[in-house]
Length: 348
Image: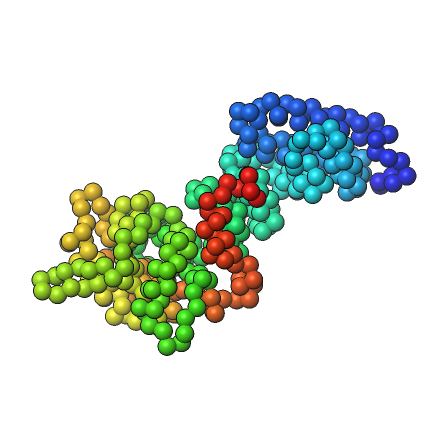
């Protein structure tokens, strides 16, 4: 049990712990000039591990972290991150990841602030690893990472019904499936009940930064109401993108109501016309995404089963239809646009 009557500074074991941490800090400070973020994370993990081990050996309680914070700030007044709160995060970090190699391979490439967020928001280790990899691949700021976790991106990713497995070769089919979400979260949009597809399109274009963020990495916007001419007639695709990783055009058709089988036939037609008029020899087959307010997966499956063009169907949620637990946690458009330009380590 913890002895509150005797200060830790008089305890030889505590002095050994303090000396050990000082040595770790000095060593890490030199190496940090080469790889600051990685070394800082390794240092924090190592400090957290030392605290855990000594608490287990000596039965120390949480007050030892208070004194460690005070003594380390005296020794290193210029060094940030040695507060009681951060030392507790280090302890939690080491407790969550007892395998140093896992930390080195998976988490050392994202910032400490991102790692704290993952510890706070994700109790499942598999999800933490997935979000860490996604944050690194997509360059998410901490605010964006929080939003993606709280909007349950892990559960939504790749969940929309499609015919990609039947119409695209592997690994393109798997990659294309992972570009889909179900549902898409349009938390930045509110529409009146009598609104039409054109109103939805206009608002998505007004908030194109947020829309692209929700679509995911790789989407490059080409245009809305994109014209495709066939003989004497012109047909217009609601939204047209090019996907840089899939190397193909992506046509998006917006629907204000429930998915209908005829919607799939219309998209199949658009993709045939798009491939004939736009696709180059180095491009892969164009992909279609139908975004609707509601759908029945069995109906979607039957509608797509015998079509030869790759099509996915997903629903979307507007701001007024979001659950309460999502509404309270959503940053504003200004927050996103500001934080996407910031360097997390300097401004978090």
